[in-house]
Length: 607
Image (cartoon, rainbow, N blue to C red):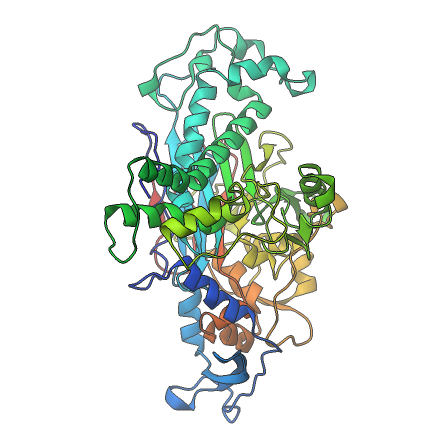
């Protein structure tokens, strides 16, 4: 696939690599085709029955080396479809810890006016290669703008039926969003025309001092594009306009993914060329590069922090989820409050079912969602790629015959009025300047620091968790916020679920999504949940507790099951945890880098 167009970022500086990880995802030398991955996933998901733990090493409850290590069996299906079992060796505790931490990273951010002072990431594969991806990018506003502050983007991308779409999103989606934001910052069409259509309650109240002579009206991301006229309105003050820009960016990138193979086919037909995979050349390679990202798919969760406006915008396409924890002081010191920043877009969401039914003929009301899935097949109702649910009638067969004969599934059942899936996100905006609580006890009083002489800042007032649905299969919003919040409050060691949940304020009905993920099959349920606080990286901390927490044998068993069998018991999991302080306190969110991990290695400093 030809590289998707990317905007030049002359003043941009990366906050992290394309993947916000210390190392890339595990990738084999020869990547499988989407069809091969589909067959493997189908085989893994066809596993039946509970995992039967039959340890042969109970004579010694401690982990043992070599052939004496405990073993367990899992049910599998043979190539003929017959049921059988497979005996596996359980990882030692050291191997379990190493696998959990293999793709973790922590970054300290010390940027003036930026409330972010730290973020942690982790990725735990179940598929091989992992189908999740992530990114983090920071852009700087034009130095000539009165409104100063970073523009920070974090994304997590949950791929399915292959890794190609999520990989493409991690490399290009921020560029698409940045293009649209630049039009907003320049008060350019079509966004200038939207101003007249906004309802009165969407127009913010701007202090006279900032609206009269403010040069922030010439605010833009990059000085390359020049300053705009001071008579133009500051469109980035209007949340609906910014939200529409993000939606347009998502739509434009998905259009490029879905229609690139169509345009390539039309080009080749016009030139009178035919493709033959027996003789792979430039055209054949280009065809596969355009076809595979269209056939695979990915959910997308993008958080955009505008430090200059002190606002957070969260765009969700699919069923990855964002949740925010906010500190609220009170009796006994205070608690954390959980607030959902996204809602899962699946066939179990009644609002999504109603939307799809309204977009298709009445006679399809009972088929657009079948068994909780789009046309009975795809779980998320919104996604990038997944062109099988978007191409016009007849196009899929035409492309399959030309580009990849015999290796592409047919169109879904009851496919009459495409498209059935959209990449248009729902966008939630949070004004971080509202509802600020009095300064809480600083993190330095809870967590070890290298020196007692370090300044007692920053203050942790909020944190945001972005994660793919592999995490939410196992933990709900309150559990996630309480696990991170209790960690920040200094809790360590083994804790009961009830004790951990005491750190979060009870959720109202409005703080939870309209439905929850269906949990995957558990190998060993046990009685009651027991959490553990032993990881310095907050993202790894969440993964460990999602897999069993203090139930060490359960965590080891889950991580010992190889792909593709592991898909029966756990999904790929990718998490980013962002810690926010008060950007006005000490001038920087991360002044002094006070927050430290317990490990001796220093945090990676970014910018």
